[in-house]
Length: 121
Image (tube, rainbow, N blue to C red):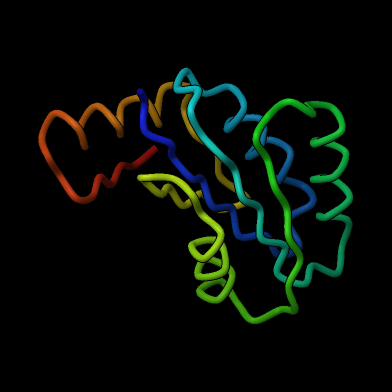
């Protein structure tokens, strides 16, 4: 069985970019994933964009939680607390993943017995 990857997306006032970040998660060639969006007290329509996206793709494994604004590190830590995957990927809310990014990461992690993979998109 393929290990689960938890993609943690901290979100603060990125309504302009969050939809593309989430779209890049749903387009992954690697299917065994969960996406955790941690809305870090956004004051714009970021949360609304996420909710609209979830309605559009209801079968995808996307969860969203909202916390008071405590910064990027706190949002990532909250995502880690909720993550169920064997592996974790952090994705900034204004970035996106290539469609095979998670598949390639798992290949390196499993084949090379590595603890961490970093890449530049």
